[in-house]
Image (cartoon, rainbow, N blue to C red; front, top):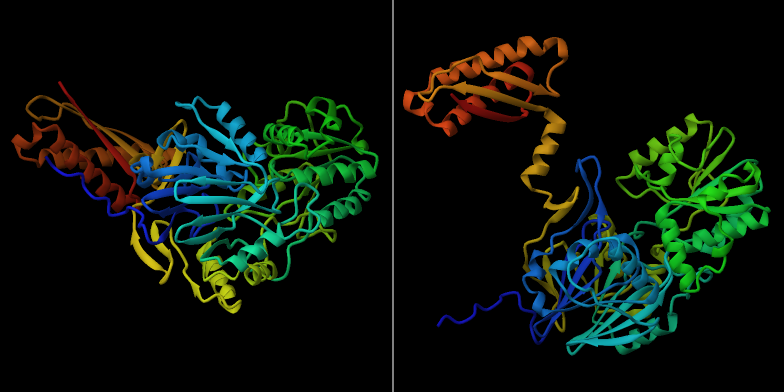
Length: 561
């Protein structure tokens, strides 16, 4: 009887491995694995969003084939906080893993709500852990450490193993007045530093930004200053998960005797959960979209989704006059209380241009004298402070592009961190004890949600769609008898290649090129459909390249009569 094959990727008994499958070398799509004593622990399971380079693909997530094949060794998924780039892939990928999910109450409720909207096979077990809670999972002991961010209940994770302790920062900043949730647990982080931290796996988003991130209290003050000078409707657009920003908008609106309406399904969902968790006692005072539409223009503030230019968002619909309940008019103001996520600039620009065409004033954080946005990510001074408290032996910068990671690594070295490694997705990194190094690489990639189907981004369907978008498509139908004799001139359809007035002549010439190629084939080859398809396709592509300078996607259909 054959012995079971040894898994070369089995985590060792005497070391801790780190394996990112998403979120290293990129912003978004965070999915990280820790391994020791034959077991794996997953931290976060997020998405990023498609752009013009992925036509038809709105949501992108990591390929989890590696860990799905080893799901019997995956002890759990632990979630740091409730942003889409950390939880958004759960509803699509959990079915391949079937393991417990651990999260604090607000995040757990977000996940439950998202999952309830989908028909997911299997019963998902979500275990709520209190803030600051500790729990054991196989060889891992995990502790939630409260930090401030732009969503309630963000956490760093202290992951203790028999081979050393790792601090996984998640997304964080230092904010003495976060307005919602707890301040960062400075004393516990100092304590960890005294106990000894083998490695810190840290957020790199703002590693290029000097200084200290603004406080949410500064944003509330900025809103109060700004709103006083705006005479008509005010729309504040922000991330739907930013409950503190909603709270700031409500406080500023009340200060100027205005009512507040929420606009956008995800915003309502998140604020309802925040109210259930005790973070938004103002919730009962908020107006529905219907009721907000009846308020006088100078007496209302809308808080609205769509700060990133999302096509189906509430703000995008308001910008083109397509919202069922609300309208914007000349003299109204839209305040973008957010920053542009890289890749979204064009979409945001389109929405802002449409608003300006309506006569609506657009105010962004860059052009406003008051502070109307605060990042949720630590800047350089905060990173330096954290390193001084934690004093890890190794810094591993994640959650950033290579430029962010490189700057983060240099900053860590300047803070006397002895070792740094800049990871890439798919690399297995030995964190310690002892020498820290890359010890292997596993297959990794990206999957896209294409309608209702998950496909690899390298799938032919996706590649063909991109190619069609760039170079067009050509379809030819060839009618032959059983012996291979052409019975009529090949018929062509050209999409996105030539103008209408050129269509007839180009199709005629292309048909002639295909006919010549078929007639030059050996008689036996003309009886083979695949040979005819190959020859006809080559002739069509060659003709279009020579005549039009195009290399379109081509399709040839053979009909035998």
